Image (cartoon, chains in turn orange, cyan):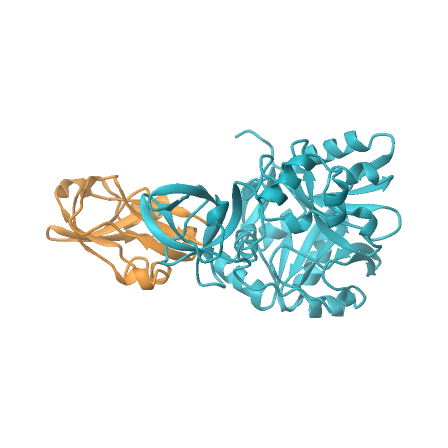
Length: 121
Length: 364
């Protein structure tokens, strides 16, 4: 399926029961140079809207929220040594975590590409 | 948030240059243009232009002794053409502000104080110097900082005489018919200048500086990371009215002759801090992993809180997170291992000497 977006500028792409998520290009641009990403532990269960990760730019720390409820099944540990990947490919190699969704219906209320583009205008 | 923000004479230029404007100390200021990291690095590699017009500029004309009684400098030792960093003290010997005082001519002193403190500083000075000296606030002047290893070469083309000054000298110069008060100093740890120019000419003069390919505009974001790497205090964060100069590791700014005379506010406390060492002290802290520790982060040893971070972030030139903060004086020795409690997680760190990036002032 296509990518879904939150109003807090997270994206999630779901295949089957699993989703990969990160922050949008818009968010990465607003944050500026990312110097550190604090990711959750694999196995952690999160509810939609919970604090999931922290992105640190030169300027400040910003929270990233879980776009959906579920269990963290993988984290992008490559960001540890290369946090700038978040700026270079926010919606590709700069992904944050993979989540096993517990409620796929949550996706229905989220924005699609067109709605998110409108949201960030 | 109905507070009306002031604008500097360079406001339109900032907007034209694509700056992201943010409220700072009552002003709309550029926090960044292209990006903090790039701007930081450009300043370390070439030259950056900063708008610091929000800072307070003033002349003090008349008997200087009343002002001297409020600060830590020896004004008799401040020669014509020299500048000094000094501290304005409250009656308890706490730091009311840090400021630059210079003697660019024989008419009197030239003061540059922090934006957020300027009204309070000036009122305090006016009250103390009543009847013996006059404080003339220079609202009509903007202040630009040109900083970086190429700053001297850029200045040499514009004003060769100003480029002959060395670190902490100041004077009046004429460029294209403009009368500029220029000092060789700054807030980045690099060589550079601060240039006081009349408001109505500030924008044109900034454009002239920016027309040199070596010079790029730099926002407050990089100004903060540059000064942090240089180990320089940010007033209101790394020190405040409760902090003594000795706790702030600014003992060097308390002139020896003034210590002997003990004639500044809170002298008893400050001299006792020098003699007995204060309970806490400002230190530099290097983090061993990549998580930055921001202002307010607790500093711990074996689980016991021993201090707090007052400035922290990522140092682009250092290539790692760095911080400043206050720790118990017995833990202030470089090499002391501490933990920084970032979001509940202990991050290993070490007390280090500052600056984090070597100062590169021009001393001739």
